Every structure is written in structure tokens, then in C-alpha cells.
Length: 142
Image (cartoon, rainbow, N blue to C red; front, side, top):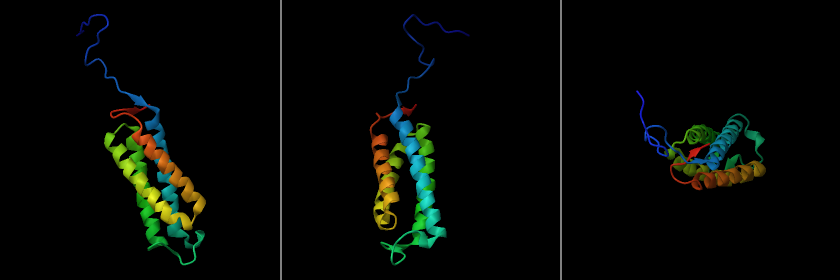
């Protein structure tokens, strides 16, 4: 079965035009990297308490075991959100902003323990928030 269209017109079912955004591809990649960083933070905090340089083995209100689990769970969620961002899910953009914000705040608390790593991760979280909010609604990753 063939369908006829006049020149210059396309069938509505022929193909859909999606706006593509390199920012979303970048955001998905950064979400995966930040998630991996947070998983590394969590595993180090769980298995090697003396790695981080803090006097009391406490960061704000939690000990290293609690921080380890927090970072591990947050990192796993961020990896999943990063994959969903790459596949073009709009809900993933909103969730990605929330979790990037939470990770940045958490790394402010973690700043005493490992300053360079925390500053790098906070910077990536800020870039991630921008990359998720800059593209127009309905845009998809390239």
C-alpha cells in the first residue's frame, strides 16, 4: 500500500521531527560521570574509613558508613537518570536537576573530608543543572 503526497508535503505518519540538543547528550554523560564519582565516594567511605582526612570520623552529622550508603545510593540513581536523559525522557531531566542539586549540597558537607574531589563534583553538578535546563522542552539528545 502506498500513500500519495503532494510535493513539499509529507505524511504525518512518515516521520516525526524532534528537536535535538547536544546539551542533553552532554547532560546525560555528565550525569553518568557524577553518578560514577558518587559510587566511588560511597565505596571508599564504606571500605576505607581512614582515607578521608577528618579529625573525628564524622562529617556534619553522619559517620563514614552512613555517608558511604548515601553516596552509593545517590550514585546508582544518578546513573539510571543519566541513561534516561540519553534516551530522551523528560522526567529524567527534572529528576536529574533535583539529584544534581542534592549531590552538590552533599559535597559541600563532604568538602572538609576531600576538598579537591568535592569541588570537582560540585562543578560538574552545576554544569549538569545548566545542561538539563538550557534545552527547549521536548528536545532529545543527539
